Structure formats: C-alpha cells, structure tokens
Image (cartoon, rainbow, N blue to C red; front, side, top):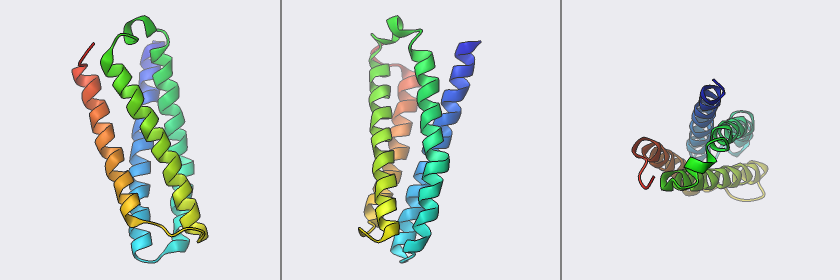
Length: 139
C-alpha cells in the first residue's frame, strides 16, 4: 500500500511540476516578447507555488519507491537515465526561477528564446522519462 501511495504522490508531483514549469516558461517567453516585464512576477509566483511543490512531491514519491527497491533499481539502466533526467529538470527549474526573477526585477533582460527552450526541453525530457519507465531498456 505504501508503494502505491508513493507512486500516486510521484505521478501527481511530476504532472504538477512539469505542467506548471513548462506553462510558466511559455508564458514568460510571451510576456518578454510583448514587453510585459512587470507581469513576470506572476510567472515567478506560479513557479514557486506550483512548480516547486510539484518538484518536491515528485522527488519524495520517487525516492520513497526507489529506496526500498534499491537492490533491483541499482542495476536498472533505465532508472539511472530517469534519475539523470530528474536532476537535469531540477536544475532547469532553478535556472528558470532565477532568470524570471531577474527579468521581472529588470536586472537582466529576459530571453524569449531561453524561456521557449526551457519549455521544450521540459516536455521533451519528460517524454523521454516516460518512455524509459514504459520500455525499461537495460534493466
């Protein structure tokens, strides 16, 4: 039962995290393109109020499943790939929050290209992680 709850928490966290972060990145790109710098503070709030809790739930649920099954997962190549993708997405989340904060404050210009790139990377990496879980190559 605990594994099922951990799976629910993990999947809910991933959907919340990836969905809100990719939507926030697209929105930031649009706002910067239109010169709406002041509205970027709302994007930052979304990242902090939805994206960050989703990130924490995704990691908490994932680790709750990973630790008890470590003897199995430590030899599964797909799990190593999935963990690497999770780390990359976590770093991208932090980069996005920082760039949006600086663009909203006017201390650095916002880059629509960067924001769109983060959104596309988020969605592409999430799809690769889903494929790894379904196909489980190397393990």
